[in-house]
Length: 68
Image (tube, rainbow, N blue to C red; front, side):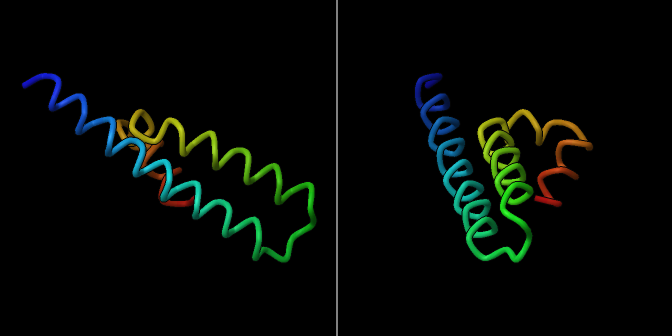
């Protein structure tokens, strides 16, 4: 039973990472800002995409996830 829960959590984590990474990449490709600031924002969004389950446990993390 515990392995099924861990597998479910892992699948949700990977799915969330893919969705957030695609969103960050789309923002990078279609933004009109200068290149250095776009790339820096893209890197920070990818880092957030990796730790989104941890970020969703606090109110500040949830606000950061909503802002992108």
